[in-house]
Image (cartoon, rainbow over all chains, first blue to last red; front, side, top):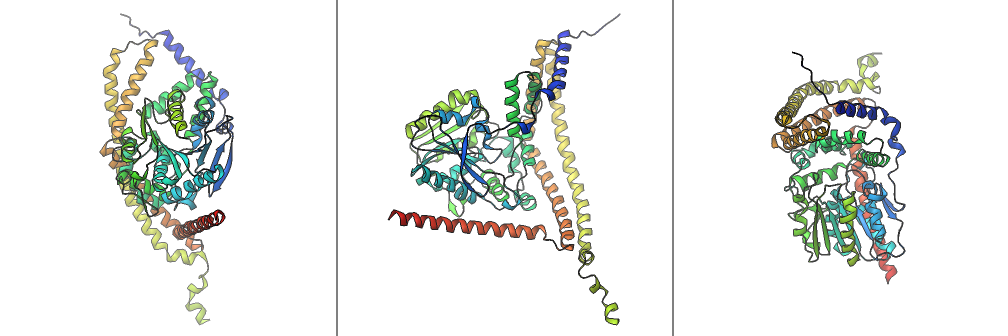
Length: 354
Length: 169
């Protein structure tokens, strides 16, 4: 008897096509240093140590009176909020007539290992807010915090409510004990004291390891398979490379800040219990009594909804809104859903209060 | 002549060898401790890979059970890949989320830090032998700088507030 295995010729065709795409890739894609992540025009209007305050140039004739400052996360950089014109959080807000500022935390070096929560909250963020208040002749501004940037912004808003007219918390890291992500599991078992004492700042490589255990097969295999399959699609490739460049550009986190963040948020969970102190000052979430808008992504695998949601219930505001979106951590700020749903809702809410 | 020959250490008091010789015992101690820590580090590393390979084995078995249900034609490659990725991602996320993984990973990193500490200590001996500041001494400078910057910042803010108050009057 003669038996032979039958392979669909289409499968062979697919495999050959995929191999050809892999071989052609170096000819079709740009080198990372050829890609600029600075998309929307802006000016640096204030600097303190390594931080920079960026002021975006307006895209509308008239603007809302109250300026908006974004406090971006400590991991990766603010570029994801302006990664490409069609998905730009920044551009969308400018087109809605907001006067927009962004705080770039810069790149800490070894000598910044003693920078702590106090420096970020009462130093850098406060200095940026004061600058905007003076420049715009406003007594209060609107503040948006994203991810770990929202932890800093939450602490700031609780300590300086007199400077914040509206507060927007986007995927904020608040209740570490309720967080169900892999990140929180690693953080809970970390000897952060020893880590910071030994190596100082948290190196980017450590962050890359933490990212690598988040959906490892989707992110580590499927993503690249899709990339090679779409190698002829210029727009897809450009977007992919921009996001990859952004992902691979994480600054170190100052040691003392990292230590306090892991201990106070993930291990001892002090913030949500109103037991956290920053620079000797007590953080009472009830002091956040201005209009507050909390945005949460249901599929967030970096900051789980259970970790963010408690902020909405813990603050003292009477005018508060909680919105949940069927997307992920990055999808909430840089996707077609964010353009069609998340930003219009935020813009409407903020315009009514600006 | 007698004085010179009776104090030979005085001859080498400014060179690197005297300082290095005085601390050479420290280097030996650190190397012995590195060996001990390496043993424990390897135990946690072995456990780490054991956990990964067990998760892989279980996930692959689940995929194998599902595989016969998927027809082997080009249209189904995508469906099969999806099943494979979903099962592997779920099982590995479950592992990374578990207490046993968290604990072992925490101990693995902690041991790695112990090794770094020993390496730092050895480097300090070499640095001191050539009159360069140790890591601790540099850290002291950083700490002092940080504290000074903070104090200056606060003073500047106070001044600014006073000025603004004065201008407002």
